[in-house]
Length: 310
Ligand SMILES: [Zn+2]
View 1: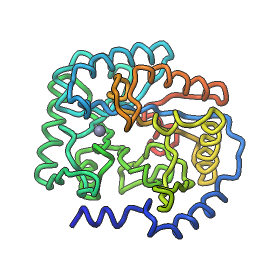
View 2: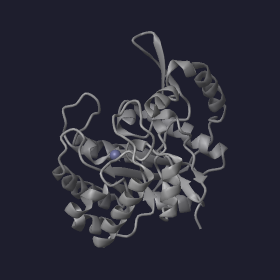
View 3: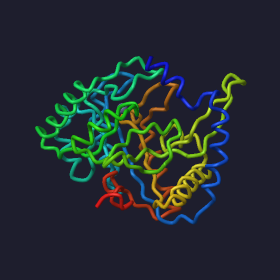
View 4: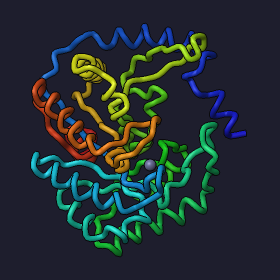
């Protein structure tokens, strides 16, 4: 039943065509170019088991390489960690927390929202959620890691029950909204919990599947999206997002979203996973730095910069 509901409410499908056409017109009006000078950028990485080969060793390599890379550029990020991996990389995480924000990405990549049409995973019930949050927080503590205050649900699937729960466990930020469905690139509050989505272009784009079925998609600040853009297309994307944010009174900001396994060489057609992505990330950063005054901040510091936290 939940699967069917998720299928019917997926606004990328043709039954929502009129809604999406109207959305395109209305959103475009909000993205008339503003002059953008300063840009806050949050790089966020989900640290999790590789879904392709299920190995954990590459995670250690990723943490080591990424730390070295970011150190050279003085960049702080937010790492959302699958809690059952912490014991294996305890020393590395302890070192990383000196510079980076460590957030929580579930215990073992469970489903923290409703069941989805594209996934066979079953939802956690409230009792299971409580137990897993509490175990996860214990693991942070046992490994001398600061208690996390930012949360990202695995697969970007979350519901109000989970939002209320993490708020009660003193989380301050959630970054789980499914931007691939066209979430506005704006922060908003759910009670006292601040929701900062990873960045998507607010204007829907249309593509024809099998030459006849019109489907909607959104460009996002992710490798699959950005690596398929030219430099000018990417800078256009940034200008649209920034102008849209300014029109709502927010300082321009971007939230990048990638996974640890996207930096591991894989022969998959679905997503381009490659060690080249370290270089690609640096190129993306350089392109931004050449065009804006960029400040790299963790999500927690982004919330402060946007004056949404005291
Ligand atoms: Zn994940």
